[in-house]
Image 1 (cartoon, helix red, strand yellow):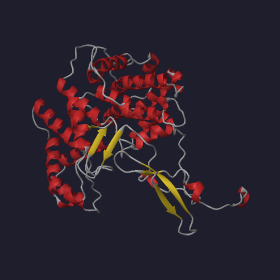
Image 2 (image 1 turned 90 degrees about the vertical axis):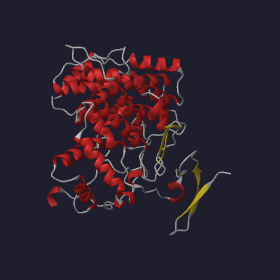
Image 3 (image 1 turned 45 degrees about the vertical axis):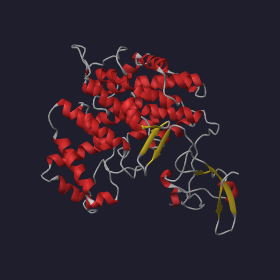
Image 4 (image 1 turned 30 degrees about the horizontal axis):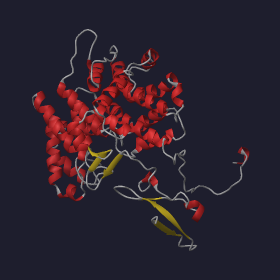
Length: 430
């Protein structure tokens, strides 16, 4: 027997039963598609904090227990044993690849890393001081003009090719955006390099000299990409699904997701952490002074990189990236004032009853900014790296949505609170 939930209108006494969409893990959902038909009302949920916009097989999060799994596999196992491109295959296809499947997948990605020369001219058309995220939003959207056949979005072959192209071209667009902002020559991708190696050489190589990516840098960035590859129905992923629900060209839908990620409350969080740590390090205040200010509601000071919208326990990604952060700085030699500040801030906050009671644990952004800074990646590129990682999650959700039997164009409702009906007044009488 199907489980149902009864909703009663206390004013009229009208009631209706609604089926429950059972989850394999986590919270179940009440299917309220017929709510308006049955009771003449809609649900009201600002920010969609209690609304399931879809059913998905891709990522599972339990914020209370600090769990993150891609296709059922714990993020801790993937971080230890996997590579970013293997995780991409897993997210897209639902299973880990065998060696032949992974080789074919990597070959398909490598085959599409080059950009049309028209894209080179397009990127060069941006002002020299354009933000790299602005260039990425425009460049990814512009791919729609170079691949108009991708508009046949329900063709599975078209979906797969769009996925390969986006995964392959995103590092090239990211690196070229950086090069353009610095007035430096573009570096073309090399088929002999791995995904992360290729990105680093396009970022930091010069035509005048040889460049070999540091293996530790490659490992650190590969880990960051894995940890940021997907995170369920966040703002940018929901944006991709909503834009894609109109059957828009996939490059347009992903460009919309990049725009959403650009917001400082979403993808810009690790940049905020670095700015905060810099302010503390360069100020005449101690870390303890700063913590006390953060506890004072009237001070206007906030601790960036602590707490999470979803995780009410320790962010599972934070411990993984913390270990890499320590390893990176140790093997590269010397200490870092920013890291010293970060470690002291972490120690104080985790021992302070104020933060313990509120479960304000360090999140992934707390450490990822330090790693990116140590790799020589400038602040304005932090969110670009995030977008490069999250592309596979966006594409996976886009494909899943289009293949869903319940696929519909998104159309949220509203509670109207404006003026009632009133007549137009001629301008001479206003």
